[in-house]
Length: 400
Ligand code: TRP
Ligand code: SF4
Image 1: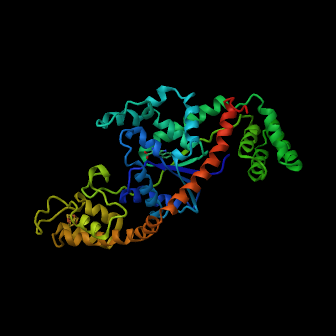
Image 2 (image 1 turned 45 degrees about the horizontal axis):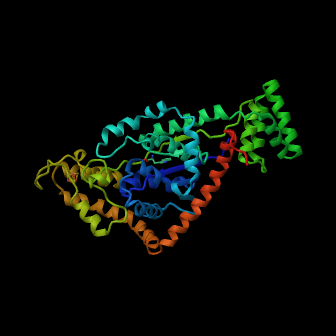
Image 3 (image 1 turned 180 degrees about the vertical axis):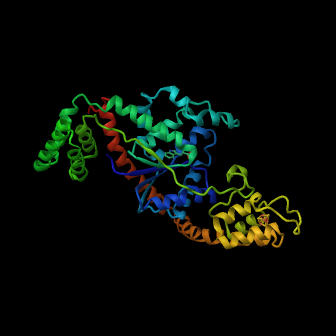
């Protein structure tokens, strides 16, 4: 078993907004303390749908990284990198493409959905069809077993899992697996290798479950084994081949889905967002003019909070007391919408102030950001190389 590792990615779409913060980034800042995390700028993924408009790509990449850092993603905890700067993603994508049935890609639900929904762009390319495979390569390249994503991405994680299984099934059994396994056993040192073999015999010959557990613990603690060897020995215990690629799971989190200022989904293309680094005046103005319940045309008209996006914000930001104040005040027309919005303005300003502070540091010194990314890419490449070595070997490509 590989150690827990998280990989997630975002396509660079420019400055991020409050929806990204509540939906994704807050969660990243939390899990970076719980797992080894890699966070990737998915710039190649952006090209699968926007290959014609690349003029802004570079600025989108850096703006997004600044927003991650501003939101509290900590480069000392997590690895931040750019997909295209780790070309191993492309190699793994290519190698996996050999064992990927086209029908599997065509059946990924987002494929047909997006083609039907998005009509102003060309989505008939080979690259777009391969989107889920590129994403699978992103994940499998790091043997990440946890992938924090939204509901919409779950089919992509399942797809990655299928690909990992298929790969392991075809290539996990090295022709000289037994010999490799025994070599790996000896790397554990005399005493431990003897114990491992003894426990293995107890399990394989007598079905002794406790021996199996003990052997697994032994492997988990063995210091001088490479990841590949450790996997071999886990496999060898139970007579399986080697798990070259780890099967990933979606890491679903209950994150708040924040509606846009007009009550629709918050999205740049709907022009209803609150960008994370807006000025205080801008935030104030945008919330003051945000949509309210249409029934309240006049100050004296009663309204219904459940029909109002401002109330959705209160659900996220305000305590029970304030929520009750809104419910009563709105339905009885005792408060006006301007009054109702003020606590939201205060909360959002307070929430975003530290983000703006942190962002300023990075904006004033772009080399800081470049260095963080350079370090992250280097580290990512190192991890990627380990997996690719095993993948190449499995596929018969390990000649010098
Ligand atoms: N497809 C993801 C999205 O559109 C972005 C992404 C690319 C990703 N590669 C990934 C997410 C790997 C998780 C893991 O949101
Ligand atoms: Fe919306 Fe508040 Fe106005 Fe009611 S009082 S319509 S909840 S903004």
